[in-house]
Image (cartoon, rainbow, N blue to C red; front, top):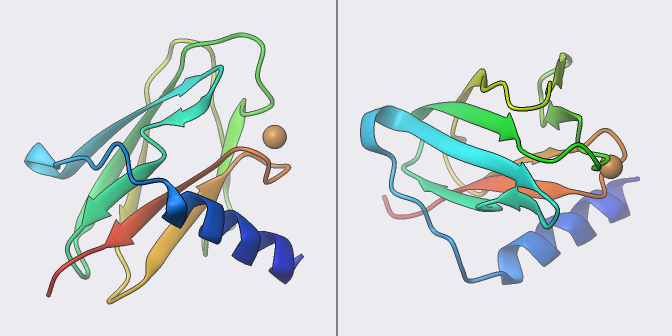
Length: 112
Ligand SMILES: [Cu+2]
């Protein structure tokens, strides 16, 4: 399980696209057929962030999202924005994923 998580984090880290600025600390994320878009959100250390996730496709296993360190599974109804308040870690990243951990995303801490 740990290995899978590490693998997922590595896969996410390797994607260089879709760095997102965070006006108002709201990060808009869509669930599309490709997964979380963008899959990676850049953040400052300890930055409070509202993840606003909207599922845009009916056919996806990402009809819910688990955030690392958060015991609550957040359901994602179709076309309804769901706000999840999180805090960026001091360094590294905060991963989020569908319940089966097949669709992955992360808040990645950059800069100091
Ligand atoms: Cu899944």
